Image (cartoon, rainbow, N blue to C red; front, top):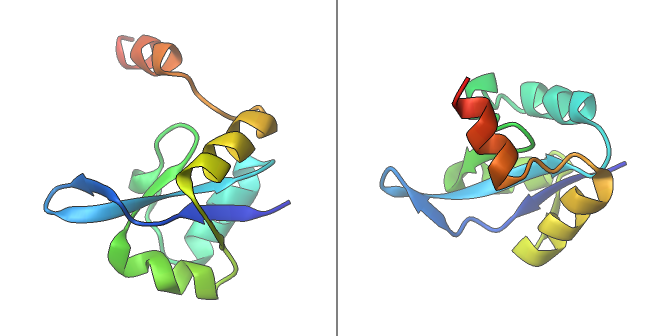
Length: 93
């Protein structure tokens, strides 16, 4: 089991953002995020959006830095990935 983070490169709200995932278990992901001070409101169904200023702190806490392609592959392999269609269906309820 591992917590993975991609490099901050996703712009939103005047900042760059990373994605934080677990390669196996959402409970593990929530526990890691809580211990690192990442608010639950940053959770987006299968990952946390985290601001670039948290990146080094999360890596220091044990998140493994990977590129975006590796992060997506790990999320798909975990079975935790929420597809765009699933996201739309959840937001329409």
